[in-house]
Length: 124
Image (cartoon, rainbow, N blue to C red; front, side, top):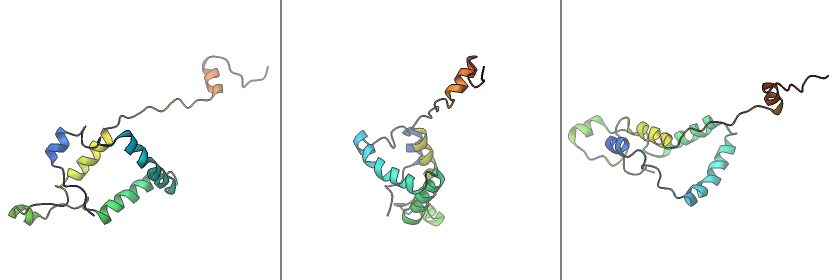
């Protein structure tokens, strides 16, 4: 299995906001079920999920392939793999297209009451 034709470094730098947003909301929902299943299979440990995903890319695609130096020197056309560093740039661009989100406060009502000077944990 091969990934789509490699993306050049210039495309990654200049079009990073448009590289991956080609999924409609309906298509995104279609991906949710298998991705949730894989996340559950990993026990909720994203490190296991990432390991499985990148292991798959390494074993079954050309994602981790870079051109042979002699082929580059001789001008042999490259239809597989990525220029050295381009796969990593693609990953960073994919990650950065979504904003980081702050978690909601994780305090209990007792913590909030203590903060406001109404400590209900003490008996009168």
